Amino acid sequence: MDGRHRTAHRTALLGLITLLLALLITTPASADSRLTHTAVEFTGADNTLLHGELIAPQGASDAPGLVMVAGAGPVTMDELRPSAEAYAAHGIPTLIWDKRTAGYSTLQRDYGQLADDALAAVRLLRTRPEVDPSRVGMWGLSEGAWVITLAAGRTTDVSFLVTAGAAGLSPARQEAWAYGEYLRHAGVSGSLVPTMQNTVIRQLAAAGLFPEADYDPVPAWERLRLPVLAEWGTLDREAVPAESERIIRDALDRAGNRHYTIRTVPDVRHNLRRSFDDGFDRPSQLPDDYAEFESRWITGLAAGLPPVSVDAAPAQQHASRPLAPLSWYESPWFQAALTAVCLIGFTGHLATGAIRRLRRRPAPVGVPRPARWAALTGTFAVIGTPLYLLYMALVAAALPGPVLLGRPVAWSVLQLAAAAAVVAVALTVAAAVRRRPANGSRVRIGLLALTGAAFVPWALYWGLLLP
Picture 1 (cartoon, rainbow, N blue to C red):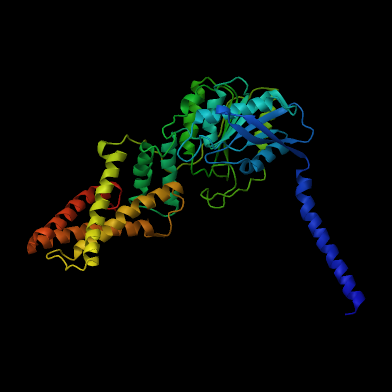
Picture 2 (cartoon, one colour; picture 1 turned 180 degrees about the horizontal axis):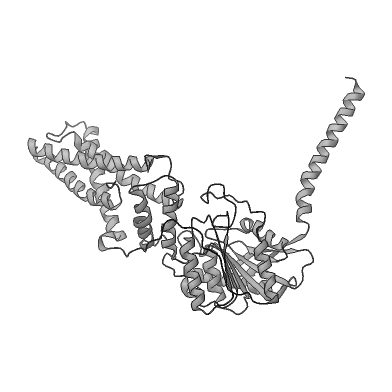
């Protein structure tokens, strides 16, 4: 190939690359050119400065406005932006912001404080020229639904509410139900299911590790007389959708509200986004018609308040169950003490053996070989069980690990270790009765037997010795 052909080919290739780059660069810009993004700041509860963004249609004026309140977790405005842009593309200027970090964490939150933050956002939005101050509403997802219903009861500045995946039950009862849904979806059966749904949830709440666990959302719904659009996805595996729909509808009826719309959205999960795993995955893709119905409902309020409209509730195969108060032996302090007794007893037996070997002293007379196995397997079970259950709580029971014969492999290993510890303690005591060991060995065996006696009820309570 001569130089002229090589030059022509290079020129054509460069031209093609330039065209592709231009398309990649301009396509998002042209798709977004009909919207404006304006950085804003406002002061929330406790004089906390919050940073946000107003997304609005180009040239918007006196349009209905929306304050968007996120679900649980340290949600930033980046996570809300696709939803806000969808509403803005349908003519609704929408305000989003980074959720506060002061006073909000995994171990601390106050829905009343978050409601005050949302009301501060409402006040800001009402001052914007893009928005008609008499037509400002709030949108809340999951935990955000609890927040906006509280906020709306504190002001007359909010003219409507839109909720997605609202739970009508307490956070603890809702989470317990969701644990069961995710575990059953993973193929888990047996003792881990009630342990997570009952024991773990109640222990976390009693220990103060589950903030707002007993919050009752119903009174806030009973104060709402403004138009409400409450939506649940047919694939919602988190909000106890059928029960929540009934509870919230009954609360609105008791409030005398005659302008609510209950809508079931097909083929979407808890956050009304697409699902590729029957609602158990967490993709970020919006449906093609996202915000279309909602925006029509919002803009239609200007023509008159809607009558009551109720869709059939989403299917819900399993009912939620109330969570009973802890008995005395279930208190976090008692369980912590029992755990410490088991851990000290098992590790103490191992430690004394290790010290003896380091000092090169002869093996004690009359200590059966199963004693060491009891201490090893018991220590493993006492340390591993809280760690695994805490991990399961942190991942909301959605990632139990490999499952074999209806049990996560990790849980099966812990159960086998617990059973082995009990058997080994029993063998140790039986052997000691037959052999009549020396006094020093008798003390070690006695302490191990007492540890085993404490370990059995501990392991039963946490489901390790149950099928």
